[in-house]
Length: 107
Image 1 (cartoon, rainbow, N blue to C red):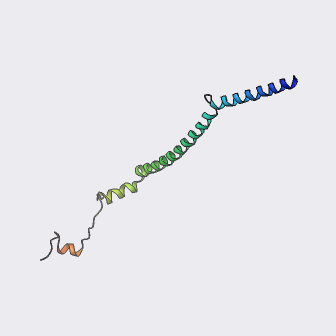
Image 2: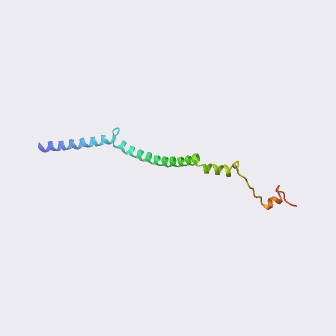
Image 3: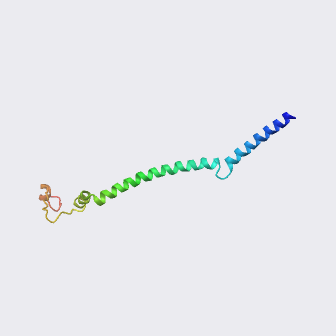
């Protein structure tokens, strides 16, 4: 009798722990959800790192554009051809251009 009772208790204990393990894995907020959330956290962390790098790059570009007087001045001079009012501009003309200013071919 004692062995029947012991084996029944052992069987019930094993069944209990098996049911509890399955419940812990499959229930809401169980182990399967924890594994899925860990994957999601990893993915979001990667996105966050990429966005942080992009944000730093954009902030540096913004600082250069707003505070970088040199950059603004170089763009104004090179792209727009602007000069300061007190500056004198010297334009050097090639001798070929001087001989044929309109670009006509000589006959």
